[in-house]
Length: 284
Ligand SMILES: Nc1ncnc2c1ncn2[C@@H]1O[C@H](COP(=O)(O)OP(=O)(O)O)[C@@H](O)[C@H]1O
Ligand SMILES: O=c1ccn([C@@H]2O[C@H](COP(=O)(O)O)[C@@H](O)[C@H]2O)c(=O)[nH]1
Figure 1 (tube, rainbow, N blue to C red):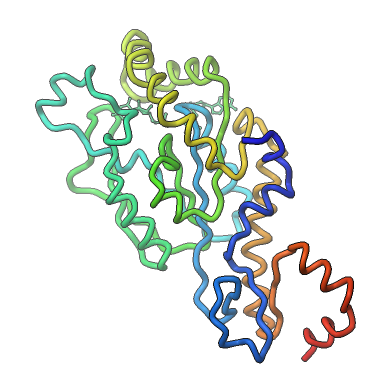
Figure 2 (figure 1 turned 90 degrees about the vertical axis):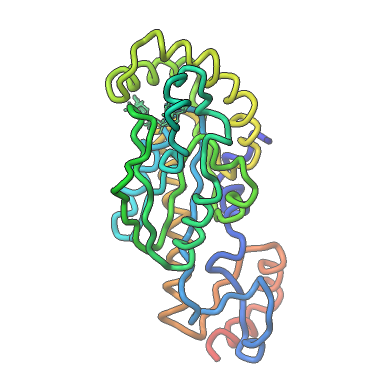
């Protein structure tokens, strides 16, 4: 992954895609091309994937993004909610269970859930209990349709089908020693563990799975945030970009004859060569 992936140009380029963007002239309105967006089409939510190692600050970063986007409807879906939950036999040998392997999650259910949300439907998300290693059998969290869906978890970039649902992928990159220290504190305070069991689990499963699955998925990220929630500049840039993407769609709804185009080299060239005819086209 090149270092320059943190630059704002790179963020814009990678995360633009077909989302809310397109160029359509009145005569070309019926042309079918993925580069053309229909201003009257129902808005597709902007899906952001947030990955990174355990205790890297994924949830903290998501909370900061949600706070800054207070004027939009944003929902957070945690991959943790889709832990399969242990059966009685597995519970007896919980210390041998690898919660950091992709198979520990019900990815099919996660996919179905995000696909439904993307198509504007509400979903019932399971509630996972980290102390019991089980899902609640009778309660769910209702997640409603929204403008922005944030999908957060250690392995949300692992499965290509899940990655393909995302308009923007963020990797929270925090040093391993900082993460381990945070994990010890969090798991002993919030998840009913003792220090020894945290350290054992970390050495046996968490670190090897980070090396095998989480770190290799970093290459799929559009944006890498060093230091997680401490990196206010990166979070501000990300929020600006999301606002731009959401705003483009709103502009199309207010002015049906205005078409938002991606800032490619060809577009700059067209503006340079044909400024008058282009403006006339916009007015017409
Ligand atoms: N920048 C930070 N400084 C200090 N503590 C932090 C910071 N970011 C997160 N934490 C703490 O570390 C723990 C894990 O953070 P969290 O955001 O839940 O990480 P993740 O979602 O990646 O597991 C939490 O107890 C949180 O309060
Ligand atoms: O029952 C469980 C389920 C998961 N874990 C650990 O949780 C982390 C993932 O959560 P983060 O909030 O991203 O840290 C993962 O590393 C699992 O090892 C668990 O200990 N018990």
